[in-house]
Image 1 (cartoon, chains in turn brown, green):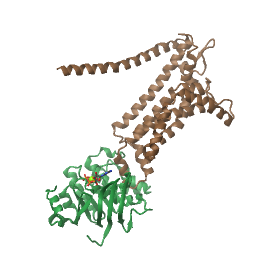
Image 2 (cartoon, chains in turn blue, yellow; image 1 turned 180 degrees about the vertical axis):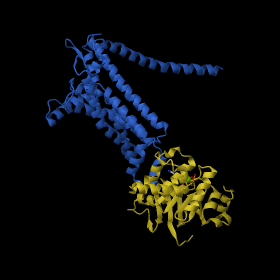
Image 3 (cartoon, protein in one colour; image 1 turned 60 degrees about the vertical axis):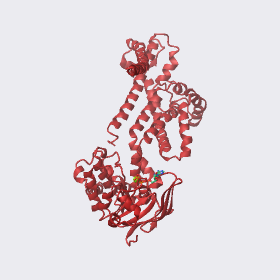
Image 4 (tube, chains in turn brown, orange; image 1 turned 120 degrees about the horizontal axis):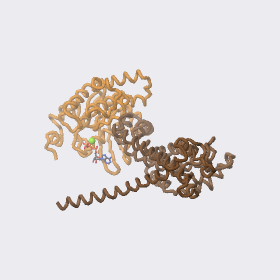
Length: 295
Length: 254
Ligand SMILES: Nc1ncnc2c1ncn2[C@@H]1O[C@H](COP(=O)(O)OP(=O)(O)OP(=O)(O)O)[C@@H](O)[C@H]1O
Ligand SMILES: [Mg+2]
């Protein structure tokens, strides 16, 4: 009897702790919406999202964040183009190809990359990459899409690599043996059995890596250039949503339209990262339920 | 044991996992188009020997082979021999059914595709032939595009046999192929073995004495990494040369 009471108490303590974090998260989301929604009194949702003019301090101001959304997407997309092959291939290398000694070195180095403060990366982008890009490609500024994408890619690689690696490790040894026993080489086995069997995990890794890139603030604030305009080339500057919020929040008067517009931008950003996470969750579950058998 | 028509011979083979010697001085002849059974208590090295014959042990770090394994006149452990070529000619069926998480069709064509069988027609013929040989065709001919993971254990094992046969190997190695199966599936696979030996050489590891007696022509008894006795199955099970063999097959061992 006494044991039962003890169990109940322990159970409830854990429940309470779990609830605290959920409640805090809920409060933040509610706050985000309370502060963001008022902007739709001065601009329609459609004009807010699809308007291409972001002049929040003009008189009259215009609050169209389309160029910010495009900015976010374009740097995320370019970062993915770099980070996906890099991340997935390094995972394959570490999990399947590298001899033990090299693996011991590689794995922590890739993980260390994840621990690099983003401001340090941003600083590197400003001080090293930007001048180099400017000189090499003879462009007006090195603070642009290319620069931001490369750094974001660097940040997404550890996420993609370590989650993909776990997925690769969990491919049963039996599949590999079956493949080798049929006279497959190591690379045929990797390409036709191991990677397909780990595909759901790898997709999850990719999506979470992209979520990481689209939400990242410091790097895009420092090196994306800050131009709130639809870019015409990958050497143009952009102003992704997080950069815009971080740069302007300090100047926007409390509860002004501008202030509310920034929160509304936050809602859009939150919606995007949330959907990335939901997709990742869906992908990993969907494949799991059928026992990765639909491949 | 001397036979004129041997396909694989091991000559004084020692095998090491690191410093542990798992096989000691094993010399055997495997006769063509016959079934050879390997029996012996757990841990005596049966699987190790089987995996040695198609170089599957190469995949385990820190292993070492001494002696020779002659397959059709060449030592498969000679430098310059590609284990991939060996494995294409010496197929293997594992203790636990291990189909790929792909369709039934793709499971069968996996090996042949690597070998360059590209045409859809050739693939379809091969799939049907192999499944028929493994007596699985009737059960799966309408669901070839379903995942192999949805088959029963016995069907999966026959699929694995069909998959190995699709490579048209010369030798088929089977490591306790029925230990995870019910009596009916087991009987099916035993029939299959009797059927297959017309075209293939089969080497089978089994813990089931009756099975060894039923399906094999020759039987080798192993104990602690050594080949204790190797004789025609009938002789080994009725008048074994060695006392240890007799004790083992009558269950008075250890
Ligand atoms: N990967 C390995 N690393 C180290 N030792 C191993 C390895 N595989 C097997 N051994 C050892 O080699 C010996 C022979 O193993 P093997 O798997 O060949 O036995 P077996 O006769 O097939 O047994 P069972 O009937 O249980 O399958 C055992 O003592 C085992 O512990
Ligand atoms: Mg074994």
